Length: 258
Image (cartoon, rainbow, N blue to C red; front, side):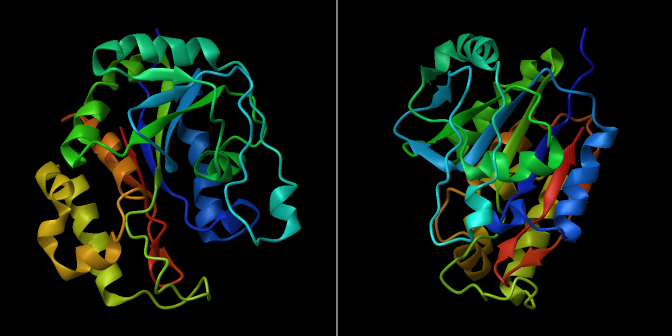
């Protein structure tokens, strides 16, 4: 039997973090030293939205550079793990009642590889992704997260990759800019809800008002968190991998549960 795996929410921020050495990348690099080695990694990324829920089923998923206008070194970064097909099929069987489908029409987007290149730089662990169903509300994503719980006992490391606060419209191009007050307020509010298992506050985040509206102008970067808190069990410890905000409006806060 594999040791029960923790679950992770990783704030991934700008794609540039894939090639930078800063306090955030150092924190996620050190993280794996204290984790059981996974059989495979399932990433729920902000950057794959679909009508319905899909799982990548290619044994050699394509690396997707889903951004433009960045330095060439970012496009030269290669991350090509193999061997995920059997794990993807296992998860699809686990979720058959939820009408989750397999597809080869996606690979690994930067929500996956930009963080995994720091965590598992050898790319020697199979990696596959599950999409965000844009037709589902917050409760849908939270409930689907709960249905992944058995995977923790099967050696699958589940990572939600997004950002608690993600507002590109008013971001500061200085990565180290002072965070907006509303961004700090919302980040702290959600962190408190995770630590104290106030899941309704996370599902119904809009009730915080203006700071929620500014922090989550679109949902895709927030939704991966709902899968991770859906997997939170009463006995799970909660630890911050990293806490901080880049560009004034992009939370890099990353959390380990279990």
